[in-house]
Image 1 (cartoon, rainbow, N blue to C red):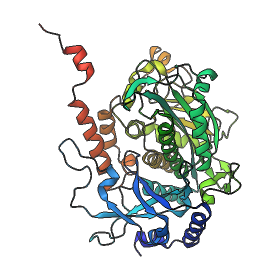
Image 2 (image 1 turned 60 degrees about the vertical axis):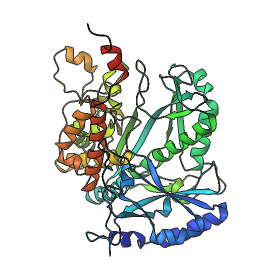
Image 3 (image 1 turned 135 degrees about the horizontal axis):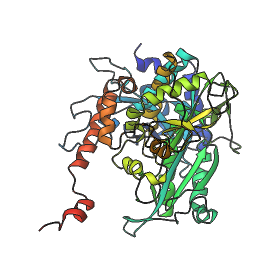
Image 4 (image 1 turned 30 degrees about the vertical axis):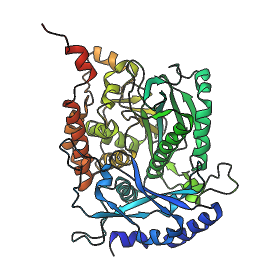
Length: 489
């Protein structure tokens, strides 16, 4: 059978498809968004009436290959990744991701896996390698089979709520004042974040805490960690929720990394750990009847955390944790292209007064390093911002950990000093790439991280991001005008 046929006929899927039909009837859903994730983390797909659920669950829907690159043109007016002569992908829904949209309960949502067209001469019905979500699932399963370990991830998505003019254009101002952790400023955005929390719980996110950060209108809301794929799905869902709440409140939900200089950017610190065993249980989140299938409201818990210290030194991870740190440290330059994936991302790394993670070092609770052990049993990859694609980054982290564990790598000693003070004392520490162009060069040299973007995935990513970098280099900005407009005579 082809990859597509295996996916459609996997054990237990037919029962899941029937359970979705039961939910459609129970919830009165008449329309469904069939969605997948593009190279930049955008949500793309099609809408189909729920009457056609069973047919679409079996046969899928077709969409041009170029949708995996947002169907955007490069600066030479060529479609990125795929031309108009390319075939159409087949999107197959994953019924375990079906849930109702809380802001219009007539509509449901389901994530999809993408395949090559059934009529392709080469590898018909094969996995579409430019499907970043499908790739992550494959690598997650391979990693677990090889090492008996599951990567669990928790993200800290910062973003800003900006005001806009009557015509919809941004005012260039955040809604609140840049006072970090101040409840008064948090309270000023209460109608917004309470609606985000309401919608999030309705779509399976177990919200655990939140605060006002130190940029205008900047909030961070967190949910319980889970395996790397489900957490990526929840981060994408959270972004959709914020966009909807912004529409309802006349604001802009801004995930741009650094819209303001002189204040903190929006990071998305990624906390990770590797576990054995564990079990999945449903968290009803207060719902009497779940507005979706149980899997959307399921979380993994328990098992053995292999990152926990195995010596009396509670600041040092266990052996597997140290090996994983060594793997990630080796590949930090290439990983930066995925964690800091836009031209604007590097405004965050240059504005170093705000704890920017610019150095390729690690330590316990040391926020001046690119990687820190944030608590016994987990470490935090800090060079990640709110614009990143969590599916690409998750796959790359799996590859880096795999090499560290497979080769029994040993990291350098952790840095406990402020990295800036350590440098003054003579420590030689490398900086991470400080531009998108440099990061793309480091990625091109790193076969391990590139293997997380197999075949067409790397081609599409490099094409898209290299074009973004070249557009920036060829653009005249306000800085150019301010600096050079009247510099002569």
